[in-house]
Image (cartoon, rainbow, N blue to C red; front, top):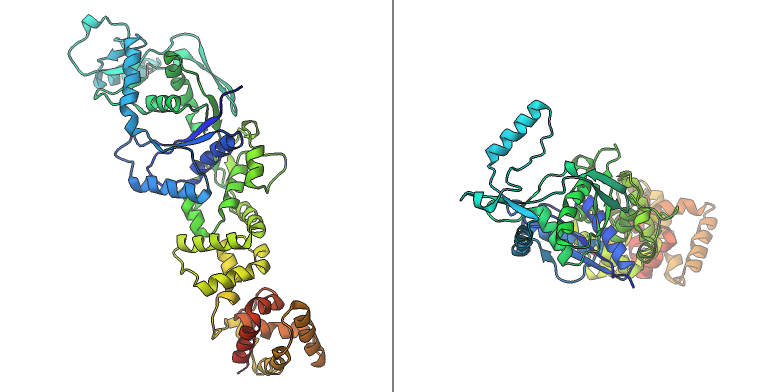
Length: 466
């Protein structure tokens, strides 16, 4: 029986959860959840100058919005520093690492001379095999003894086998001269101690894998399965950056994209399952596999995102859709619905949700249900409320007062009234839209009347015709 899958997401808390990070978290979440494994969260907060509690909070909020729940407690990399140092000292005791007393000036001088002579600038410390009795009483770093011959093969599930000559690897520093562990050591120790079986991360970390494998091998630990995923590019083919627009997960929430649509779209950025574009979380968890990830960078496309989001809005349960719209309003700093508006909005969703791609569009289409009297028509709608039109509405109102309030009856009454006036229903629709919604473009007149109910419909028609 194979060991359970354990993946992790390990962001640095130096800013918000950007889209590239969100997709990395999603891939790890999908892979673990689809296999009954664990998805862990580690905050890589070793850079104390740049790590902030606000950034950590933003990352957690972004993950919460995306619905990417993690297992167990959040691990702080900084808190594990004593354990990281312990591993470095263990390697030192085993003779697999050494104390290097070279000063920064000596290392710089070595590299400058190598550059001038056209040699490799890879630093070769004279202290690697120095006898302990030659050690001075001076500050030192602890370096790992890199293999000096042969090759290291990174067996990557996305990139394929990547071979690096060992003579291209330096004796990496493990502990700085002040005794603090470096990031490369911390990552390996944390991944090992957390039982991580699969490291799924951006391909900008691919070269790190060979150096990190030195630590795994020196400690006799199992090397995890590597999967280095391509970065996300903007529509111009360049690495996604601030110039391409909003980057934080929470910004997309505030712009009104549903979380399910964002998950679906991000899953399709660089991964595919046949020609499937639209799918549920359950399908994504069942289908997601590392073999479906492409090597080439994916392009972020807002139009595709909107189309996928529109499809998710259309199939979402009305009560859930109302709740998520209200969460969007809060995230965007928009006024919250009153209790009456919340109820009216949910009642209207059946005739709105197949025509909206984002929550702002949905709220705009629901204007008729959210507005309260007096209804102020916009410029286009006002043109449909001239003297003749108001007169028609005055005549129509009594026909509706005693009508059964169902779609079939309302269609009969309005079409019959239009026929009696020797006109088509289309001629009535403009004034009715203006009276009921104050807009020239609205959902169906019949849907609006059913959502508003008899009393509110008649009150709006009476006000508009006055």
